[in-house]
Image 1: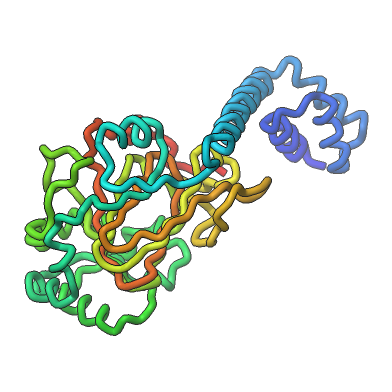
Image 2: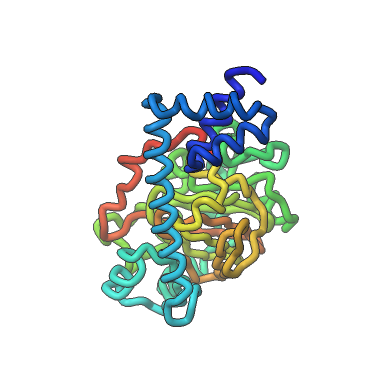
Length: 331
């Protein structure tokens, strides 16, 4: 066996927190002679890189213990590991028990006062902005990595053409006007803000700070976590939202940046097991929303023709992205 292969095996074992006996067993199991395995492991006593890997493995083990405690506390809480539903939540209660506690919730009664609840329809969109040229994500179904490659799927189309296509009411994940397109669409779709009103949980000093989503039934946002706290509210149609907690990190298969290698897998709701993360699941319909705390993994599926708004303009700084640096490969 090549020398580099031995070093790679040792590095894997050190990263996993293995002691000398386990490292020797790893090498012997890969076909290295017992004498050579002992020699390679004995050399580690003077290797500063090995010492650093062992310290890092110890730190990771401590983090895993802390995550395990967070899971135990979540499962032992009154009612167990469940998603709270808050009707017309008092802002102070919401911030203390959910925002500040990094705990998701389903929310009702937040946007009953919006004119959009009765105005928004494909006919209304066509009447107020049908001739506008908008940006959308297209040709997603040909690319299994469409969410990570969002820039490759940006296209400018006439809003009326998108609306005509949506009128067919055919299930598809091929075209979707998303929050990622909001910068390009802010001006041409600005009149839609006239159909909205302030939301009690948000910062009233930023009344027009949000993101518009429009797509057919069948659109899927794969498993990922956001770098901010988010409020997603539904105006038309229904969406299924699945969520997994940050402390299930190891089981979420974080491959790169904020994306999970689970992709669009419909992970089952429940406590999870050694391979599957614990998952909370809900369906939000017109007038309902869900609070998605920073770091919580989630997957979103449109069950109907869907129009939604998402917001990050809370009464807190919500600037967690500023010290985020883990854009590269993680798994």
